[in-house]
Length: 296
Length: 283
Image (cartoon, rainbow over all chains, first blue to last red; front, side, top):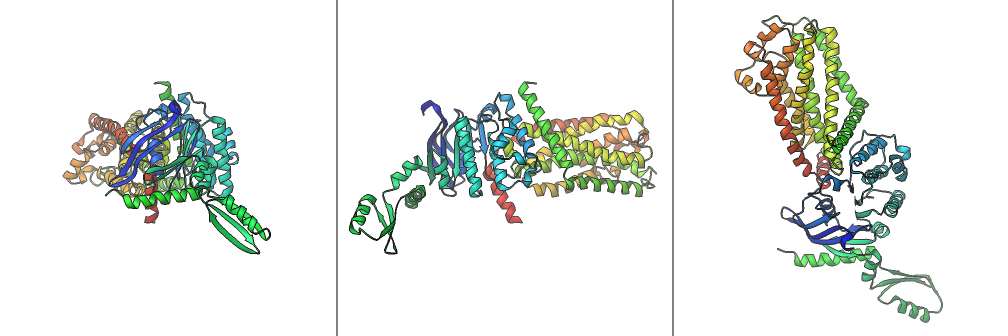
């Protein structure tokens, strides 16, 4: 990464009054990376992303996005950033195409190659709704419009805060394809927050787990799972009875099992911990240390 | 003007025009105007024969400049204040904060919308009044001086609306208390009867506010010259009235951007979400 880091965060701290939310967050995001910020409710995911977007002043630490301090950056910097926040309810009277077209115009003075509005509507699957008023859209359509507005200026850096909250599985799948398209075609760097582990697994090159005000883990989804997956679960059916066994060495256990019972074993299944188990294990571990070591 | 500034201006104007058009396409807003017109026509017909007590001056003629002033006050001050408070809560402001020079475009749009609404509001008073009020246009071209006076009024009231909309956070409070305050100021400022009818201490407060002088300036070009006896001091004070409006406009234009910047800076998605939750709990 080195010079190509799009986001640099060092010792980021944030407190509201006496409540400390972030107590020293460090991470880097390289150009073209898709990074998921994961954590329990109230872990400070949204706070972190709002600081990076320049909407909130941190209590301490150093933050650079595209090489600049988000709080002091000029409008030119703003034109290179795309923002999709949680829960919009605005512009209900506007028509879809009209609003997207208006927002595209804000980027023109900066020589940005904005998306063609109709092409973008096609891309997010809202062509049929182009003339509809925004208040008549479904939740999923509304969210896709939010994403379209976030990317209309072809941002170098895109922030997505809980992008698929409230989506049904079909819409969620469509949204994931959209993000893939964006990162593949445009090389956009993406930082997203999510509750949804399968979403992080599907979208992200790297997962940051934020817990107790610090980054508790920073790795690829696979690597994270491998690190925690010391135990595997072996399930099988023996003479019509279901068995489950947890073991640290699944290979040896299965070999033994099959040697001992040459007959009558069916539906053998070995599962290694997935990201969800990893996540729960990590949040649980840091929660335990936190309760012991809460500073004053 | 730099190419960037003129591009933002064009985008903002476009926003204002679309907002205005959207408003005209919203039934509840159109009904508000229709009810206004009906109420005005009824009032003008019912009060046709009435006169101001001592002077024998026709009441409806005296009322007209006041009604125009109140319409401008609502369209240029109360309207934008409510819109600003509402759109801060629903995320419109934050959305613009995420765009390059988005706030400037937003405020340009709000200004354009308020100006267009003022034009409609003026037409709503002037068109029926032309048919129902005798002598409305008897001063001929002098009445046209009302146009620059209304423009100056816009400049004085619009920044006030922006300040009110950014200071008070609850859109329902701005809508409710704001409307009550505007009516009290309009009545207290002698828009509907000569100020001399009110106690002296009220008169002293009122002449420091722009609304009295706005009404005074409009009366000076719409009413006959000898109606000056109905004014405080029994004379027309064109320079003072324009001067007071200009000072308020200047103060507002300095104050409003700073207040707006401050209120926009504190805006964030979690703050909006917090207020949304609070609003849900009130219901």
